[in-house]
Length: 618
Image 1: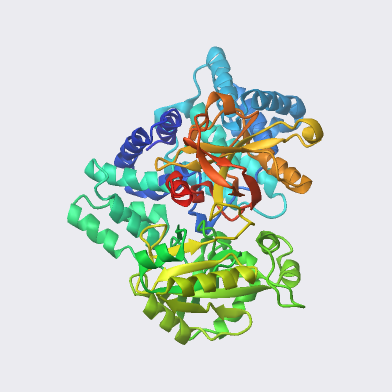
Image 2: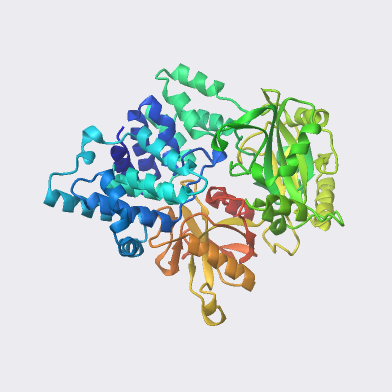
């Protein structure tokens, strides 16, 4: 497929609000892709070059893309459009003036992609008025998806001294071989603002739709993706089979792979120990730590690391969002001496602690380990303990269907504990009173309560079934609701009075519907410290957009002064949930207040409306 045709599909998707229509349109794209295009197109549809676990970033700011656009527009406006003209005349052009022209368009449109499309279209019109149309926009010379993808990979991997100028030159060359609409989406992908309003789950629906005309094989696709979270690999494996039996066998064979993250299991919420035991019967009860979820992959023979030039690594870690977090944990190399296996995948929690007292640190101090620079220095100031609570694979054997009872026993034989690597202790019980007492004991110790796990349960990714349940009744700290809520920040309102100087007085939050729409539940303007307001404002401005994102459902009376892309997640406490005619969720939080930012979560990890109603017992 030509990338220009692919871009027209993206444009159509951008203008579509219905998830069902999006699914049908994505299915049409998958139907016409060549086999060698499937993986690249799958990643590009998510605005990526590689899956999240192989993070490859362009490291190009808006300012750098503006420089490239100024040069691309000038080259495009020349009658011959040749690269030679650029090489010989760049030094003679008033680039500050041309960059200002691009900046003006960008500020007016609020979208670097739209600015690229407009400016390059104007240049093409000028050329056509002065001479014949440019040859490089003809169908015969149009770039394919694979060619554009390869060019983007080359731009992203350019590094070292002079790499920024090299990235600019490579982008100029690419832009001048693209139609304006294709340039729009290339620029958006580079600055990370493609976001067409659908999730990975929608892509899985579309894959099924492409092959069956329905969502009939969606559950099989989702189960496969959860075992090995790589949409490109999965799409390639699935789409090559026209026969239903062959497809289903391919999905059954699509299993875990050390070095590729498994979608983590998450908790449902129940209000009382009596309800827990009624639903789950005998359970394991573990402390709920307020740290960084970490999935640890170990391979003594090494795992390939394509982003790092193919260098092999023995330890990889992934966040709950499936992103590679290996750089955060240099101390994990010591884990190799603690395990009796050649390969293994562990699930656990990393928590900072005070080296002098041994006391566990709050989440906001642990999260400082997320930085990419001065990691060794931070590791010394914020040492970590790794609480390991599950083992998901060992020596090539998947344990996802193995009962938790057996996984717990195997974990004890595979991992040798020490002060740094701790196998999480647990209580086995079927008694609500014993469960409640253990819960209160953990709260008194400053932890977040407990996580309850059904003893014979499989490892079920996501929040399905009553296999894992949390109870976070915090008797005052989180007020009357028995759990906090992870909300998406949709936008903010300008400050009034004392907060005029901050530029942010309140912010609008929402939760997710089953259709991946964000509906509003609260406008929060109290209970924030000056430091929290400043941090929120800085993060909010980095995510600001000029128009309401298509995924948002907001009533007219609650439209914020500044819209934001759906990326920032905050943890909110409230006294209760009440019916609301103004909030699009149909309910609202009473006395909401900010607990903390959740930089470890994406908007797709936010609380759903169904979960909120369950928490509130509506």
